[in-house]
Image 1 (cartoon, rainbow, N blue to C red):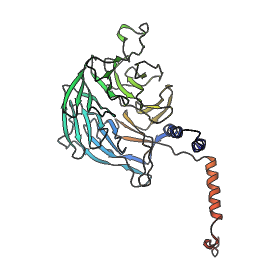
Image 2: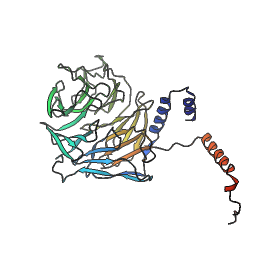
Image 3: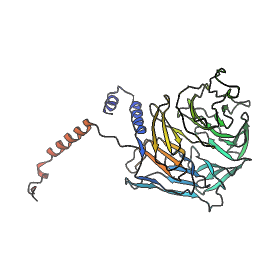
Image 4: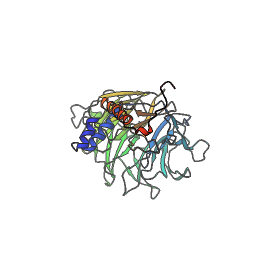
Length: 411
C-alpha cells in the first residue's frame, strides 16, 4: 500500500490504480460483521433487496410474506456496534400491501421519493416513499417474476417486466400504461435487465433456456440470442441450438461498465458473455449450484481490478473472479438458502457519519439480512515505526514550561 501511495504522490501512477488496489483488497477481505445487525422485520424469507444510488443510504427489501421494508444503513451513533433500523414498512396491516410474495424491489434511479415492487399477486406497484401509497398499479395476467428500470435512461421511463407470459411487457411510468411487448421467447420470463451502458438495450432470460438481447427502439425482433456453443452446431444437439443454458435461465447481471453480461441457469452453470457481440467467453466457473425456480439475484463488484461475482449458493455466497472463473471464497453466515445479494460500492468517508465502503448485503430464507464488510487493514511495519518515531519526537519536543516537574513515578 505504501508503494501505491508513494507512486501516486510522485505522479508515476494514476490515482485510479491506488483506488482499485484498495477496493480489491477490501472485497477479498469481506467477512460477516459481528457488530452490525439489520432489523429483523420479515416473517418469511427475503427474496430481494436494493440499495438506492442517490445517497447510498437506504435499502429496500421484499419478502415472501408480501412485506416491503425500508432500512437506514447510516451509523449516526458513531459506535462500533449498531443496528440498521427499519424506518418504514408496508406491513400486513396496510391496505396496500402485496397479497403474495414480493419478487423484485427497486428504487427509482434518480430520486429516493419513489420505488417499484412486483409480486406473485400479478401486480407491479409504483410507490410514493413519503406516503407509502401506490401512485400507480400495473396489473398482469400472470405472476410477475422480475422487473427493471434502466439505471441511466434520461430519454425514456420504461419498466421492463417479466411474467408467466412469454411476452416481455414494457410499461411507461409517464403515461401509466403498457406501451409495448417484445415477442420471441416460448416460456415464462424469469429475469429482465437493462444495460448500464446503453439505455435502449435490454436483456431477458426465460425458462425456455434462452437469453435474448433487444434494442427497444426497433419494432422488429431481438438483436441476437445468446448461444452457449458460439454457433458451433457440431457441439449442440438439435434442442440446444441457440440456447444459453441447458436448463431454465433465472439470473442476469451486467458488469458495471456494461461490456459483459453474466447469466445463471438451473443447469448449475454461470456464463460470461460479450454484451456487444453475444459471444460466449467460455470462462469456466465450475458447478454453480442453482435450484431456484424463480429469479436469482446475484451481483458484481464495481471499482476493483479484477472484478468479482457474488452468487447465492445454498446457504452460502460464492465469490468468483469474473474473468478467470476462480472460486475465491465462500461467505458463510446464513442458516438457510440465500436468495439475493447486493453490492454496495460507497467510497466516501465523513467526519460526522461513519460511512460504508465496499460492503455486501445478503438476504435469505432464514429471514435475515446480513452485512459483510472488509476486515481492517493491518498497519505496515514502516507505518508502525514511523508512528513510534513521531510519538517519541512529539514527547521530546514538549516545551519545558509544560512538563510535569513535581510528580514522580511513585505517586
